[in-house]
Length: 130
Length: 239
Image (cartoon, rainbow over all chains, first blue to last red; front, side, top):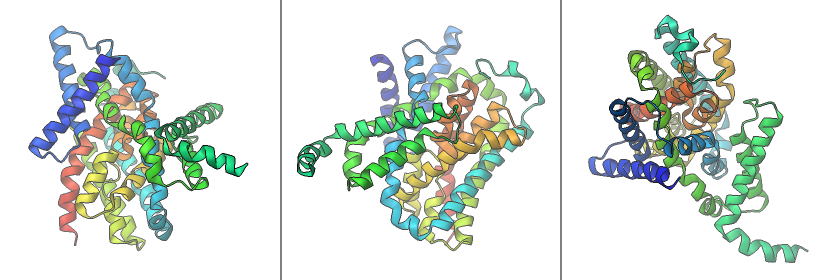
């Protein structure tokens, strides 16, 4: 557990450092995500093993499984925005709902149309459930 | 009794512990409700938890700043969890590499759709410019959405709220809607969730499918890159 947290927070720190040094317009954690993915990819190539090593994998899995919790503090911030939302509720609600639905559909449809036909083949998605 | 309660409440409401406990409890209740509803995405634990906490704050006349002073320790973990998305991403590298052109096209189309339709709908319905600009980057992961919003003249706090509302909606309706359109593929659903609903929708997908999680992680990461470059550029064109 401590070593997994060291890897995750270390990558985040590295991401923040890169962001401030090179003025990347992307947040540190996102840079950290790409760095860690790259490192894991290089490691997998060297060792010939796809699987993520033990301390990191369960830690990452349990964090991701409970990701929703982490959005609650920011989400409660909506009460501080109640004024604007009450005043412009119609454009806000329609635009949030409309653009989210449209973007979901467009992204999924373009993927669906451009992916090779084998896409429905469950053998193509190792490790998936259902 | 109210004096005694007040006596107890005043020191308690000032410690970060209280608001961490309230946040955790609200989320646990949200999960229980979802379980009781047979795992239905309509019973979103994030939404339920936000409603419970918001009601508690309003009922106790507590400011958001006071609440956040305690809840920030939970909020902090958003950073490490974003990094952790590298794990499903790396484990599906081969799959991602095989579909790189599809991913690029879908990302570009989905991201542009989100930004343009968000701004366009606000504008059509007579919303203010600052709301329209706050809407533009709302599909991206919350920290970057706020940074972009600030840069282009939106209201970062409003953008964060919109990002979370959109994410909750995408998590709730995503699977139902795509299955209705005969898109059962987790690669398409994962990427769409990451692009349109960022973290919250990705969390919903990640709980169901590992390949979906990888594509959602990719959607979040690539959309963050694209939006951070594209939206400020588009904003300079719109005066």
